[in-house]
Amino acid sequence: MSSQLLGETAAYCGLCGEPEGPTSDTHPTPDTHPTPDTHPTPDTHPTSATQQTDAGNATHEPHRACRERLKMEPPRYCRQCRRRMKVQVTPLGWTAECSRHGALTS
Amino acid sequence: MTTLTEAAESGSTQTAESAESTAYAILDIAREQVLEGGEGLNEAQLLEILTLPEEAIPAALQLAHEVRVRHCGEEVEVEGIISIKTGGCPEDCHFCSQSGLFDSPVRGVWLDIPELVKAAKETAATGATEFCIVAAVRGPDIKLMNQIKFAIDRINEEVDINIACSLGMLTQRQVDQLAEWGVHRYNHNLETARSFFREVVTTHTYEERLETCQMVKDAGMELCCGALIGMGESVEQRAELAAQLAALEPHEVPLNFLNPRPGTPLQDQPIMEGKDALRAIAAFRLAMPRTVLRYAGGRELTLGDLGTREGLLGGINAVIVGNYLTTLGRPATADLNLLVELNMPIKELQKTL
Image (cartoon, rainbow over the protein chains, first blue to last red):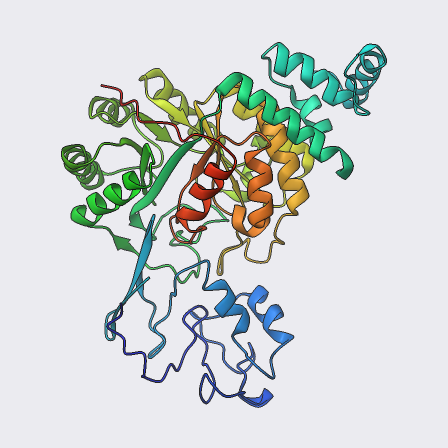
């Protein structure tokens, strides 16, 4: 269940907050892949672990490692505006709320 | 304390005479001392367990499992945990994404009581007997204590489950209040060895942690005091930690494996090797034959599905079911089905009045 419409364009990665690229369904070129040098922001800097893992498939799916990690943690960034969301984890679920774009639930 | 060499030498003498001897003297010693005698291994002996060659790990886990069954029984204790106050913590525990001092993506959030009660109900429905309410704080203020009192009352009205709390360092008055309100277990981890503590936390001391632990025990609450391994401590420090925990005689020890969190000082720490995690599980059980030894955070990452099973057959006798505080766990059904498959009964509720 989600108040964020699935059809809307996801501009940012929910895990690291970096841009997704032109669309999430096509393969971005290497130039569109965010790197620490081109997209530093103080509060959305991805971990180096993410960077290292992403490096191997940078030309295909820049956030494949992030998507893997999202199986084991809730999203922290709004995919539409990259705001940090308020996240509540419970034993059997989670909710993540963007002040502008509403709540996602597990 | 005997040195490692002395312990190994005395062990090898016994091995030659033992009918059930293995190729590893320390395992023969542990069988006699821990399984038969009920006395945990000391620090030097634990170091031997933690440095066993890979081919000895199955035998170490098998022995730890026998110790667990002999001294704790077949039952497995299931618990759910929840954060009532997430993020914005003033402490600087270098592993924690909830410290307000690091550039972590975790935002500050308070959980409202109806949601907390709902989560307690869902947790009880899994068969869990424990529900632990956690706050990311140095210690509770009056507002948090009032919330906790309110939460305990509401949960007790609607849900049959034991309530535990983890609210940081306590004053004597707060310890007494929690005990009076019916909190039967209090979690306050040592996290790491005394000799490594200052590498990981600078905003409070090991002694302060020990003080809270001691007050909790003295007030008659069960002490839940855990470990977080894989933070860069040496294997000697891991043995030290197990021995220091054993000396506290906690009712429960939750065993966490570092999950490096973005933005924290330990974000680049490599994930601990599964084999080392299994050695640690065996060692912790052999250090504390009667303690509830619980699988806690990071096991999915460090051990995976296969390792989870190995640990449950290697000394673990409790699990955190479902999600953790800021990260997700295996689906609750995966663990519950595994317990059925392993023929391990879930401990039933024995609520203390």
